[in-house]
Length: 388
Image 1 (cartoon, rainbow, N blue to C red):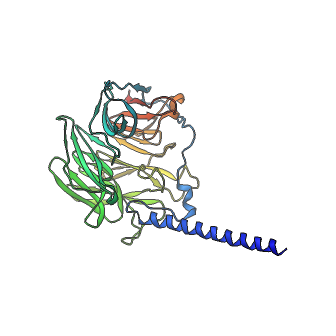
Image 2: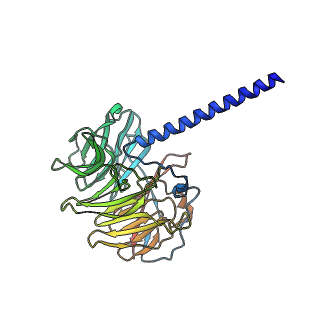
Image 3: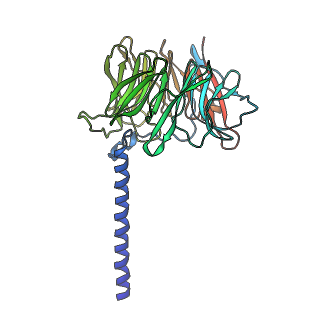
């Protein structure tokens, strides 16, 4: 009897020790998340329903055939006898020119792919580690490569496709969530001891400070930039509700104002809920009156030239991403013609609706995505938005 009692006491003590270690481990994870200069984290379990969980196949929404639609996708066949690409990562698109990180025979590098011809060019020297994914605008491509990983320092690179020249024009920084349009790169970084959103004009060599404190995920379409503000009213106090203020800033006039509120969940989709192109801003905002998960993702469109807001009624589907190019916005897998406010199916064929991959790219009415079925080589699909 005494032996049994001792064993019971020992088991209870061991169980309490294990529970204590688990609690300490969990608190340490939250502490590390809280100290990150770029991410917010959820402490309110009631907000869990806001986190998207895209699973299964995504089928086309039942929308009538109108004057705008997407064409049947075609596969892009890569043509390069000297460069073997094993896999592409983090692509970006400008027109029919795509850039991406790539796993090649000698390591990891940056490649450019002409979607019209299938021609591939290697823009960087393959190495063991990669930095910030590339962004393309016109005939220039920017990305960063690690210099000092212990201090999270990276070097910005600029490749001029017209002259095939590679330059390193700027100082070391994070270059986190890099974006690039109209010769201006913007990113999250740190100048001195101050984190914020900074920019650099690769033509004039001008450094730009856009916003500081708890801000992130910038987008640029000169002269406008937009970014997320995580502040909860008091400077230095981070929001805990998986939402962020969406701000716009005009780099020429310094006009700055809050556009709305967008999602900022603590998952892999963070940063995919807002987009900027020309004078348009599009985002998924919060709807405090919504009773269901799907209804709580409300699409918005804002015209920066007229300061007018449009709230479309769309049958939103996963994955919850927002894309913009010229006069077309994409919310999930539903497109919106901003000239007529007509909705259309981005992927109109049920047989390939589950092959849209992440991310879907949109540029000048070109839709592009990568598809990896786990059995064959990775494929690139290209579709066009057409008007009748």
